[in-house]
Image 1: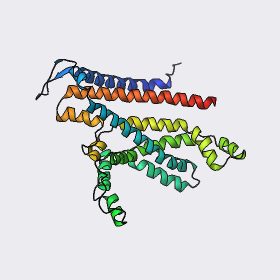
Image 2: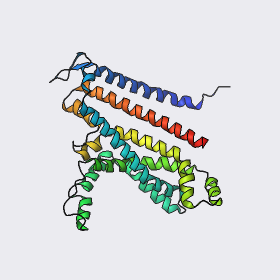
Image 3: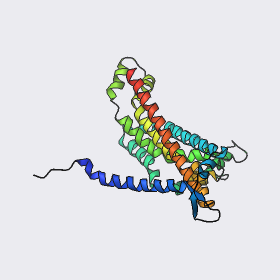
Image 4: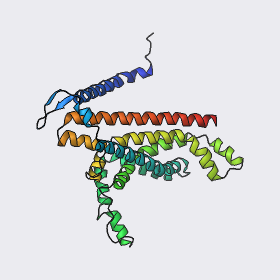
Length: 285
């Protein structure tokens, strides 16, 4: 009688392969970070620590801070806009309503990021849909600058992040035991009280998971801030691009990549710690 392999073994080889490729790429980045930049050449010099001392400048701190702020804002507003849609998607009584919401939620995933970004450029531009509509309604006399601003970048990033956020939140909402809500209502709780004190806490794992996923994704966003920001709104990935492909300073670009990775992992670890602490407090309260 042949012994059957455990189910997880089938996924072990692809996982190891991905891990090896990722480790090789990170080793190459780490190697470049310790090499000297040779101006005017794609070749690199010998060992140096100058790349790490150069990063200790205010401009790079501000870029990193901007990246954190934009990532946090994107995750926050994506959560606010996605939760009602996810709730309606799960709780809608009519099948056609759920079908429409599903289509609206996942359709953006079938469009490339560059295409969606160019679409937002047409919407947010000086003569775009937003400014044209506001002028037609007599709300403004001249175009409001939305392109090449942090607001424009966040608007586009939020729209890109919402499909993922909606899926994660809908999964969490669908797993709620409706008996808990019914019990609270039978004890005299109003619908608003049930929602804020029963439904929201029960979906907290999905809320936190969605927030962390969107935050981590936005930390590495490149094309959207590059096109919508137009060089005036820089995130850490845009600075890496400028150093690597405009200045051809690959060693310093490698250092910036490592800093971005460490910052993202550190922020995710902090969020994980806060999440565990919050869930522990909720369990004991």
